[in-house]
Length: 307
Image (tube, rainbow, N blue to C red; front, side, top):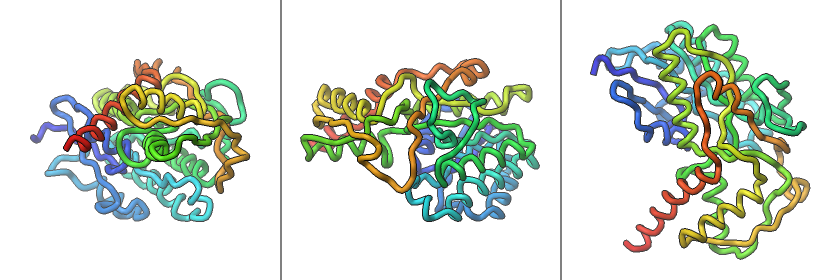
């Protein structure tokens, strides 16, 4: 086992962390995924110690910084914690990675943009976060970018999966008992399968480890295709009904009709030009990704029902 390249993954119990653990890593690669019970991301000294320490006598090959404070609305009143987890923790990881001479892959968000443009956001577009969550994630980006560590910053949006809490699972749960749902219809974006995102991060990480000349910088990843939250909900129920699952009518409403403490970008579409150019990654359509998630969710549900 001494020749195994081991990747340290934070946020191990989250949607992305779960998929990084489930990913079919090639022979010679492995992940150690940790969560808050093993490392408090507010403790920068503990972060430095963990990166510096070897795993079973072997140094880490890379870090995938996927752990984050993602409670967007709560962040508006929990500013210090959001900044500690989303900015200072990546700063500590990146500084430690630079000292260890290993790459870091930092997961970021569409919330670094204000949403006030048409078309997909390019990686070079000006950032202007609307709230604490986006600002703190941007702080993490800046820390990684200026750390001296070889890095890839990967922004994503609207992450969903068969695990944890997300929009798909919420719609299926609420739709099972409510014939009509009101869903925001003026925010545009592309859903992102955590499975597909994990595969993209694995591709980038392994390349960074194996190739000292691998491209570095900022990238975007989501599934392909634009939709609103209401449009996404309609497709969820259409595909769910086709699989014998929940179905409901979706009525579109405006953002103003569903006020939240934190402002959301009206446009979260992300351009994939950079990640395709540098890493040959071509994300699949979000409808395909949704079908794969529903196959897993409804398959598991049907098995429980039959049991």
